[in-house]
Length: 308
Ligand code: TXA
Ligand code: MG
Image (cartoon, rainbow, N blue to C red):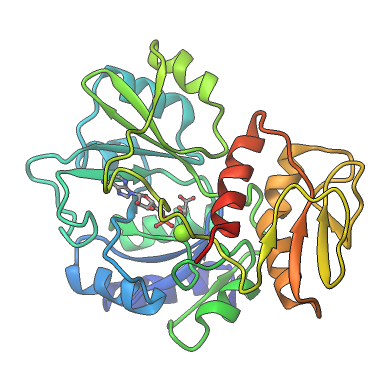
């Protein structure tokens, strides 16, 4: 684990040039980043995460100009990018004909998921490597996403060459994912960006993703899972439970005592990690309203609670 500074970024860039993955914070969650143009480097990401399948990965780039070398932007995709990048939004777009991204990173699809992250550490790493960086969340496949460097150490420590520590992430939930093609916008994963804002920028409705085989991200029914059973919509604690509260329901710790959804999103994965490490048999969590960011929070909670 290394504190984020110039020397750490230079060292991380050298590791990435050797084809090794490095953990680095973004404003959403910590990512496990490797050179997206190298199939071998991308394969090392899957190996470190123990991913059961070659799910396609998000490709991070420094700016829109870089993104346009990789994916095809129609007018609405460009409008959305100009308004929301850098930030917690990923766009799935058709690949450019000469797209340099390794096919393993896109799981052989003819589309590519692209994001311009805002976090200074990830931005510095992108500039230092001069490469597009494939980066899934830096945790073992199917487990709770990391919002602190310590979460990465617990999940992947010993399996990766370096972790850059820059404290807790500010947003705490993975990026919103939309697919944009031929003037249509479809929501693949709810996240920090309000759907109403996307619709306004696109000038059309945002459609729900069809339940096709690959479309959907983190779309395994069981995902983001703690090692213990998780009970949703708990209005009180049952015996042996560690209760995560929200609003009026206090619990052992609270997502947000004031019922603030932004604060709840930032604390969600951290409290799931805490609950998982506590001396209790199972975890319960208070109801979180399905409005605004609550939609993305409940999406993660349903997957975390799903039968495995
Ligand atoms: O906030 C985030 O998005 C974080 C940070 C590190 O950027 N990354 C992240 O990556 O959450 P990951 O790998 O955990 O989730 C990426 C999701 C996958 O579930 C995958 O199914 C979807 O993006 N995805 C990637 N490429 C796709 C494509 N071409 N078509 C459809 N879905 C795609
Ligand atoms: Mg993930």
